[in-house]
Image (cartoon, rainbow, N blue to C red):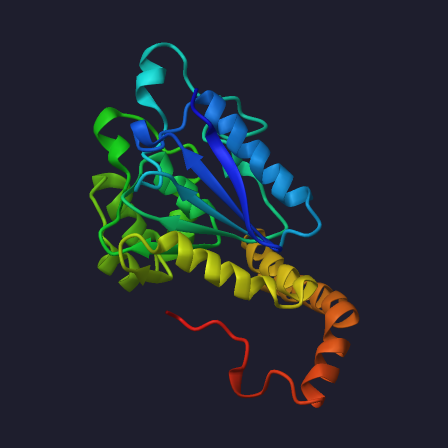
Length: 260
């Protein structure tokens, strides 16, 4: 029996959630989608967990929905409310998720990667909406998140053509944030997650929330919301942070993750 999804606690504040169906390049069927969504709900509910890493077993991130299961009449969940077809893609979590991309991160797997806050990609990995060939639509957020990340013009190219995108191009257009040697995406993502987990979390989460919430607001509304969240952060984290700085901690960029 396939484990499908497993959770590994590699650091007291970091969860690694692993898609584990290597025989099908970690394609997601209905049961796997449910388990993946449940894993992220558990991460969200754990008060000790600060950052999650999503990766795939066996050298691939995720090949999207399991089309063989769909062809057998065992398709993924497609109701308008609740979880998305691939599981967590409609969730808004209070805490960040980093995708560790290896091998193929295509079709719905590409949409899962777009759902994450940050993406670390191996040099030989491939992104792309390969389902374009089969008439399978993007319904896990791809048409929404990709234009917001890289702009409508570049997104339209990838959406209409379904072409493959390599690591060099993905980094150049801002689709991924780090490129690492093959076999190192998970370790690099976990190291980045561990660094982020050590920052004052209320401030980090409020700033992240402000970024996402602004899309539905006018600029004055977004600025007002940023101020409300910022004042909450100052009350909880800011005064203590200022005291640590005054005592000499964190000077000259100490404790800030590098871009490597």
